[in-house]
Amino acid sequence: MALILSLETSTRICSVALHANKQLITSAEVHVEQAHATRLASLIKDISRFAGIEITELNAVAVSSGPGSYTGLRIGVSTAKGLCFALGIPLISVNTLKLMAFQMSNSVDQDNLLCPMIDARRMEVYCLITDVNLKEIQPIQAKVIDTFSFKDLLQNKKITFFGDGASKCKSMITDAQASFIDIIYPQALALGAMASEKFDKGEFEDIVNYEPVYLKEFLVKTPKMI
Image (tube, rainbow, N blue to C red):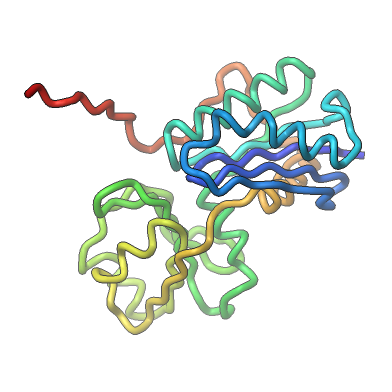
């Protein structure tokens, strides 16, 4: 039995899940800003206790690799790597935007394109465009949104924009072919489903050298002197 623990910490919502042989056993999430550092370990303990399993029984740990919150990603990846080192089990990573596209792939018409968006502050988002079969149409990038964004694709295709970066783009992307869903966020329960496929294929990360996908450098704000 392949028992996989999945950790999703790339946005303000922190979630965890357990899958056994590709089937979801249990999951939990916390909708609290900046709770990742204080709640992730307790969430892992809670779902393990609920499922009646010991951490030592895990066969792999999966983590959402980003892009997203610098702090959230760092917490999730360091926790996942720590567990993998301690237990001697493989690490699996899934790109956060691809995870979001996977979650939406059965919820739109077959001819729609999917554009998951994660807020990157101001008018910038992390985004990706795929079709419903998750074939990449435009690569993952940090993109500043303006009135010309995605014009070429919207001439011929409907695009569903979704995620916590989508709402601020509505005033800029006004084409009739565009639709917006704000409430979609990456979830560990879907991460585990994708990770199970990677486990079967042996697609594991180098635990020592693995780092999240930040896309942008972390900027430390210096307080202004008065």
